[in-house]
Image 1 (cartoon, protein in one colour):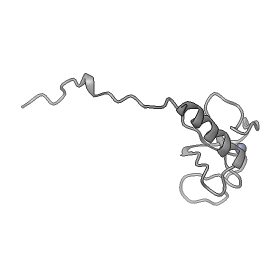
Image 2 (cartoon, rainbow, N blue to C red):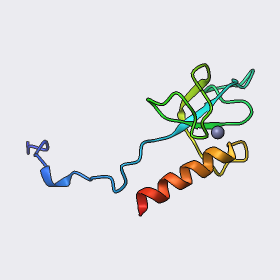
Image 3 (tube, rainbow, N blue to C red):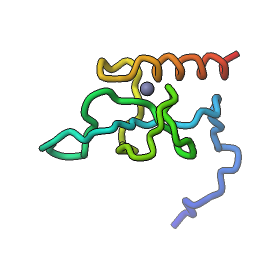
Image 4 (cartoon, helix red, strand yellow):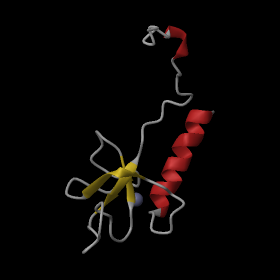
Length: 94
Ligand SMILES: [Zn+2]
């Protein structure tokens, strides 16, 4: 039987931009939601290690939705958060 666990050292892909994932945070949980818990109302962007949202609101008592990456294109997404993230990604691209 051939050895399929051969080392592939040159095969590692390095991500182009060292961006950390911003996840969704919200002060309220959607009531009676079936399946994964979901945010209710305006969804802001949060990141681990930071006690505020991207738009600067304290989120220490808020719900965190690790399974939901923040998407600024969604209608329920906070505008200032979306703009801040767009600004950050532009800065990294420069
Ligand atoms: Zn926000």
